[in-house]
Length: 227
Length: 123
Image (cartoon, rainbow over the protein chains, first blue to last red):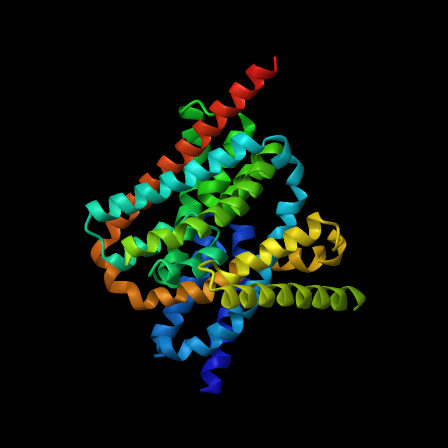
């Protein structure tokens, strides 16, 4: 039991460290830390015959610092407070309707395609930054693992398509561009927005934090319709 | 050495705020995540000036820089959902892409419209 846990922790830390090096050398969606590390770990667990349940204790130890990391997200939010105060109305409106629109579209499409309830519920909170989305998942009757995967996929999709899409649809206002990226693609969208400019980055950081707050307060009301 | 100790102390402080968030959620039966409340609590402490930014900044930055690490053990849980993905892969991908596109357009366009109106009114 103990050995499997130590093996699992070593494997996870090792895969993550390797992915950081690879991502710097060969930047690509395939070398992003979560995608690369998860793939390596699952392959290693399957080949060494370790069951998911045996990996669980190691997981619990490793995620113990996720809570404090989430609390730490208040720091970038606080640093960007002046941008928020200067543009309160468009920022709050944009992130609120954007959050509702993406949530509504996801739930609607999942229903149309007849996707299983657990997938639909896990998808509903996919635009929320991962540490909070994982906590929201059980509240809306979803699975944290599925939600984490959808959150990360959504981050990649928005960061890759977002800038091009907004240029095509005539969204040129820097605040609005950052806001949209942060609302939909949370951390990965914010990284993309920072690359576009300072105001974009600040707007994205605010949108990521506040969209998580907004969706957290809306999600419990949706739960009865998702489970 | 001194920096390392400082970072450990700051992370301990963040941990404490996180626990406080969960304690409040449990006590009041709130349907929101405890870590979210912890984040709002820290934001309130920073905004009110009760806690200076430098007392948590180094620890928070370190954890945020490696935020992706914490998702890895969680996404490993996908192992249990292989069949679901194989059966619904295309519909899942389509739903993810379309809902992201809709969300980005709605958020961006509505913010831009309101920002433009406000500027127009000020002139």
